[in-house]
Amino acid sequence: MEIKIRPYQKSDAQTIVGMLNYYIANSTALYDYDARTTEQQMKIFDEKQQKGFPIIVATIDNEVVGFGYYSEFRFREAYKFTVEHSVYVAPDEHGKGIGKLLMEHLIDLAKQQKLHTMIAVIDSENINSIAFHEQFGFTTVGNIRESGFKFGRWLHSIIMQLMLE
Image (tube, rainbow, N blue to C red; front, side):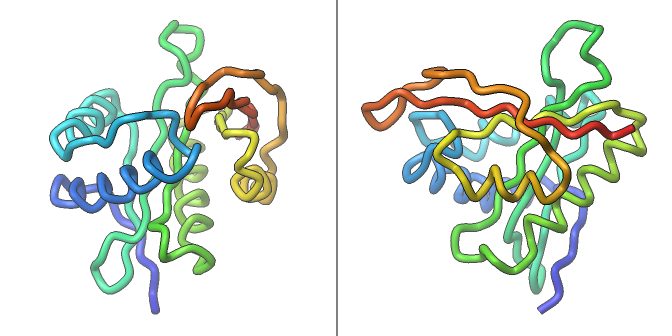
């Protein structure tokens, strides 16, 4: 089993939407309530790419098993060296190192783009994601209490940061 990382292609969108919709329906990894359509996701990715942000996918035997990207953290000009990222792995593909490869590639791309820092916003219940980020040197820099409401309860957002320089 060889995991390959490559740039996102529009033909990947349907598989990616399937992953996202699984997490929307079954977890607090995404604070969305409604499933996304392929068209919605393609528009989101088109906007990110037009701004020069990378989207990458992980494949095994040419099948998309994960993806990651980063984009602006906030929209003011002074934040242009700070990005917020996301990494998702297909639910049945965890534990194979897919997320690790995606994160390594994103960090490398961010350094190549001369970015200064990466931000992760993680639901406080997602202890696996918090531990995952710690492996890469991310540290917790904040906790925004009751920042989201899903599944009938208030959710807290953990803010983690990696300095790239």
